[in-house]
Length: 95
Image (cartoon, rainbow, N blue to C red):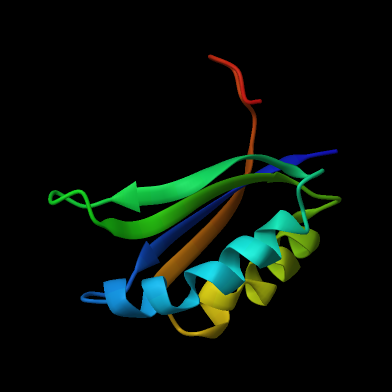
């Protein structure tokens, strides 16, 4: 199954919204445990969460986009922008 990188940048000053929707986000992505390879928050200079990166196996780009569209973070309007691209690991190892 192809691997996709879901790269999400939070809107400015969105940490309160991220924290308010974090539990729903974690429950949602937990439902994709068999497809998730790596994921977590990106941090700003202060060490606060400021975005997300998720590597997910999906049938195709449309399926990766559907996964992203269903994320409570995205539905809450947390992200300034989201970029999804096919990804081929060549160095290191994803779980």
